[in-house]
Image 1: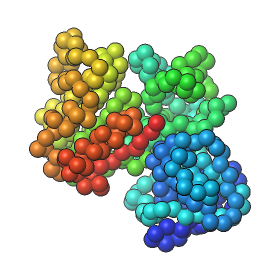
Image 2: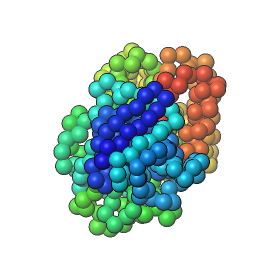
Image 3: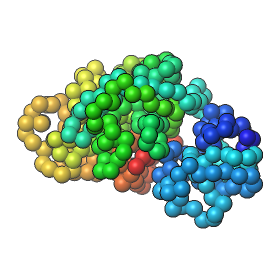
Image 4: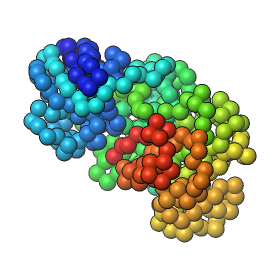
Length: 346
């Protein structure tokens, strides 16, 4: 099916395979359609059907709350059933140079281990090598469970044959509860990757600021991995702010300390605990970290005051934390939007 998308800066067209989501088809074809979560929750990929026929695969998607017309649809949840003409509200931006177009591929669970009481690390062997940018994510589909879930890659490798994720257990979360069960290893999953705009490129000559909450640290690990590989912190500062509720919720501290140890003069790690005072045992175990009580965006704003010049910021975590961080970066730090990278999942 042929899909034509009209935007403020012109029109683009592409072909959809039978049963393929319109968003996936457009991105695969090089048309940078608007999106954030790509899972039906944020509403960023809202479009209006001008002609033709399209069908939603998730009639209860939370992103539908932003609809103003019966002709509105979510590109990430809709399949073209005939040739279609659509309209999006903004502009179609050009794809970043060197970016890899997302595609469908398969993966097999090869390792699944608990990091905390409610966070699990998952490794997938994929059926063909994949290039992706540090900070990007994949849509993961589990057989028998409706809908795809967005998870950021923890690792960074060119021509990667294995993807690593962290998943937080959510009340009623079908996929997260499945991952915390037995018999997960060896199960085949579906993926669409790579996706996401919160990407780090070493040729951008700026200081790096990472603000992460909980499992949002996943993409930051990929960014730090590439930045360390490329020697970025030999010339530029790195500031990592990682927020968790309590010491019981802490993970990846050893890995973060290893990154910090490679560039001790320029890479710093600050941990914010929102729900309890910092235990002396935790601070003693990681003497090179800074610790604070409070919400991570507030701690970052206080510690970074007066140091936002030449900074590119990366934000990931629960939507309220991301929203608060964006207000900080735009209103108080006055960073230009081009220097704020984030992907907001829920």
